[in-house]
Image (cartoon, rainbow over all chains, first blue to last red; front, side):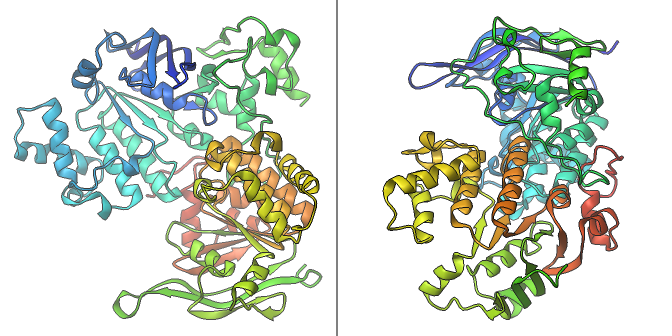
Length: 335
Length: 270
């Protein structure tokens, strides 16, 4: 049995708008992340992927507020900790985060090494400059980055290099869980591949124990992660292994997402690209029942009442729909 | 195929160099390209291969250092502002960043009204203009009633990009240059945008030039693919030839870098 590194139970977080309205961007999300495994989160923009990532760190600042649920990292419940304590004890050591705009995450007026010194100062003040340099150099070289990068300013680095530097810095303290939020969305394919290779290296070299990878590029997700979780309007709609979710999706939304995959492989030119019509619901007052019902072509009147729970489909796979597996497969067969 | 269709745009020996002497960088190096009516052409290359510079030259935003552009058989003349405007009625563009494609101070109505005015609709009664705008918005599955009196920043990236397509629908240009139209939006809106672009092409029969680094997208939409490296076209042909059976090492590398789902993705070649 592999042990669970990160466990999330019924986590709910909300944004409070300046008009005092509550927007529940993460709604009763539960997940388990085992050691050595990676989890991918897929979904449209605005479905709560990034908010979930921010919430998982337990570091809340307005307008994001914690509502209920718990986050357990390595046996410690961090959901009730004060932000200061979370920052000192958890961030960087237990859980690290690669932001979406990693390009702008570095301080343009500091050399990379000065930034790293600041990082160590906050978490490990006993180290002197020489030790810090040595540690940084070692881990940079292990990750395939030249040591000269340390003496450079961010403007001297290319986009892909900046992204990889940010990743290298975020794993300096060997966190248990790494959250990568769209680490490659602004890069071209070659730099993207380098970033992906580096992320895989991290897992193999034991820099991080497990990883959460957020992106909307499904081919990428399929290649990087073991499990894929599909989110829609703040809820999990399907969770399963990468292979199952991509090739045999159960939930109609997941099915729709897989219809938007474009890969340059033989025969795929004739496949009709299917877009999901409509837009996601406004989370200020989400609809009753299935949140996807308004855009789903298989929706029935009973989809729009009550609340629909995640149902198991064997092998640790779950989906949120009123139909059974057979009914859904039958429906997809007829188009 | 090339014989029956009219030649819209021809560029020969197009070159753009930035800087002089020691600092001279040749962004686009003697490029020849022919664009026929109704064709979808993709230009694929990595960042810094000169794709966008080429697009800007075709659009007339920057002048070429060398080479000529012929539009509908005649040499392109954009020497005065009026002639430039006349040229832009025929060639339009969608840019990569939807957030900076609009004037922040103009409402969406005025964005669309400008397009109607450009198409000699200045004297139309307002009701007619609204009708045209509603038609354009519904073409891209947006509701004009919801957009009116809003500013561009109130829309999402995908919506902005679709509004851009609505603009093209009103302008009905002969050539559309799409410079990475989907790189800033998510995969789901990408499918929507591509669908709408292709629908628009069938509707008004324009030529579309896709500039992209996404090989999958180029494979999916285009009739002809050009691969660009360091300002030159290294390979060209139909998508099946170029993307499934690439000859050049550069093309092979580029295709290898794209994540695959049916084949094994080789990570060792970085």
